[in-house]
Image (cartoon, rainbow, N blue to C red; front, side, top):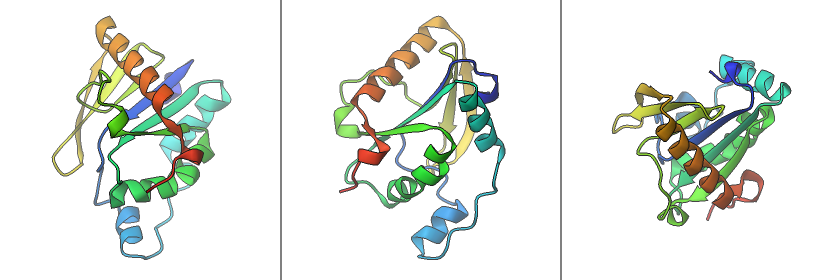
Length: 161
């Protein structure tokens, strides 16, 4: 979907745990070298192409503090896996998000016109997606992302603990 964007692809993450059986996370947790991420995987290629065409790709991660080990790992790989491909990433402490009107599920919003919600199970695994192009939904998500982005701290400046 990022490959079809003409202006923006914004992602709001609101869970402290995702895909906890990721081999890279498990290796990091055990102090072993992390398996290589395939160079130029589909997501990376799509982001790089979109950014080269002028699309803004942004991500806000809403996190509980002190952060858990998954968020600590995620923070440690963000420069290499997100920023290096052209994403702008910011971190928002959950304590600063209390008064924000945020949707109940994490989402991507593409060109301000289409929202893809990710549905997770209790173990942090994606079990499905919901899509909406309803104006009230795209407006809510656009507004939520904009406010979260403004409150959040750039990856380079966000300190753990």
